[in-house]
Image 1 (tube, rainbow, N blue to C red):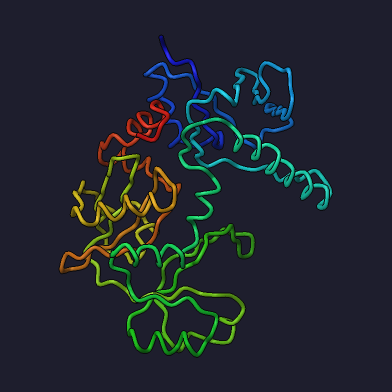
Image 2 (image 1 turned 30 degrees about the vertical axis):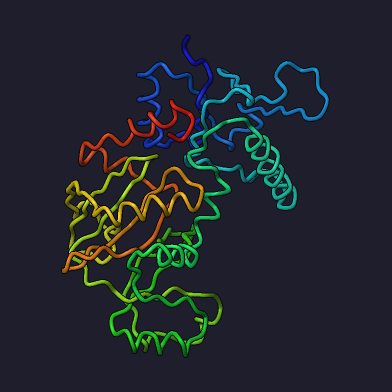
Length: 319
């Protein structure tokens, strides 16, 4: 008998990467329900009952075309949902409503009986702290470049002087504009002379620059590993995708095993890792994005990444 339990796909309407996984699920005739938290109040409804309750389906999420019983969900693909901001409300009302969506809708989803989340948003959030990432990578034996997180100008200058060739990186991506123009924090070179007292305002991340031959983006999906070498002349390859070339790689067993242990330690079943390969062939840890982009890599290399996600979500047990 066919398994009629749906896969919930929680993401923005314009998520092309999620579309690729949905196409794979549709080919397999797997029931799917897709929605975005931002649609609550218009096309999205949540209803959850707890305690002694006679309702046949105590917890449901509904859209105009689908209804899902949260006690009968095969898996949840928590991709890149957008939370409502309620710009038409007064600021205090908007904050109140936004908090209630997160804790009402989010909490009801977290209470679902799904055996598999890819990935659970609370575990994604816990995995997104770069200092904790660096410490875990080091414990697992991965090569970590000398790194300093500080808001002390003296320590920053001392570190940069000692290391010689240092870059600065953001600790967390946030939406940012200057004069109305969106800007992004890249990995950029930094010198001791550039450090001033403004560093005291917040912690900064400084890291010794790896003399890299290439970058690697590694996607892990369940038990599968997809490694892609990215060649360019750029310090931060994200600055210009047109300047990149791609090669499918096979990781050394030691590195592959450590990355899988890394996800297991965080309770994640998938993640996108950034590594650098130096000119001696050493693999250096850079960071984990627990919900990173990968769709363009499938297009560039033909690797069956979306099929791997569909396999994982169809099984619904993390195998």
